[in-house]
Image (cartoon, rainbow, N blue to C red; front, side):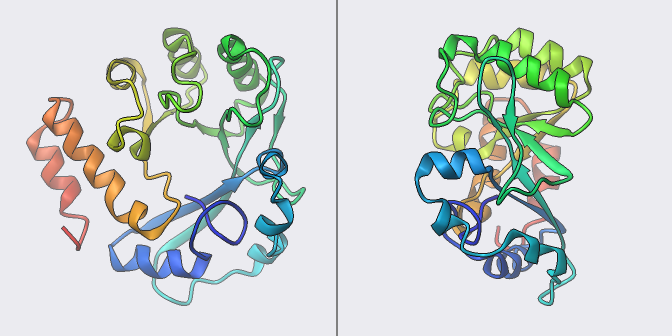
Length: 228
């Protein structure tokens, strides 16, 4: 999820922590955008208004929820080079991502670029972000090849709840990941508190409707949320 402190979210870190605790989250990970994205947005001095190093002293005084911090990396070229810093500092929790405002090579090369990045940084990458999002590179990925490479390196792929619930992911690509990826994450990609509350729940309901998950698993998931 993203904050207003370091990226393009609408809420501060403390607002997110308080709200996530109220809806029974046990752990969250703040993964704001890399310096490459912030530079491309032309708002680096707005997004970077709070010093990233201050997170080292952050303490959650609101609830018992664990709070981790990471970076949403950017693939910057077809050779698989990446930007993995935010405010010029790196992180142990890293999401491999590609954004159209940063990756300016031919979009047809995105599968090559991503697989090269995976081979370079496999030990650090926690998962591959939004591979099915059509507003990014979802329609350009060779998904079979991407899933095969991710499985080989034991790297999960993301089911982006924001994209799926808003109809911005091709259903056949979502289905392919569900059927062929060894590991996956269902993430909110929250940019505000409403995103955090709704997107994952809505997407699980969609997966139930499409027969991708059982009623039992759906009920088990829903029981974790006090607002349902």
